[in-house]
Length: 202
Image (tube, rainbow, N blue to C red; front, side):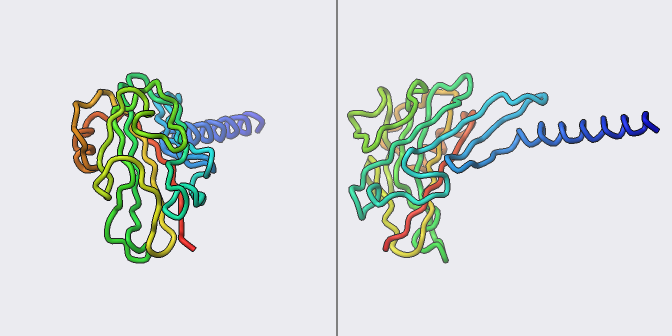
């Protein structure tokens, strides 16, 4: 009987270990940011995280960073770029435009590419001249470069801060739209992470 009990215990333990190892191949979200993890042969090999010190994942973006405030970009921090990362892309967009109850488009707020993998993030209110060396800017949906803060006409919108680790430094695309940049990125994305903030005008 004791042998049977020991064998059953071993099977349960193996099943639990298999579950947690398998879980490592999926993304998961914490209060601070969104994390994407790759698992290989039962071992976690890469984790990419993007966070902000001014709002938590799925939390409310302070008014300062919106059209109702100073309209400056929030500080962003990232870590866990995988080996072989040659450049980083940041896209901020809102899939809930114009009304979260009946969204019709995704509004693009910020487009940056060829960010140096040595950069640990972006400071609050960063200007073009202060971006990490080599960084290039794309067009947002106001048809200009730079950050444009949340300014939803109705309801509470979600703002996705999407970080991509690429295995290449992209050619000079000029001032690409989000769509043009995404096309250039195809086949070069090593890993992606997201930080989501929300905002509703009073």
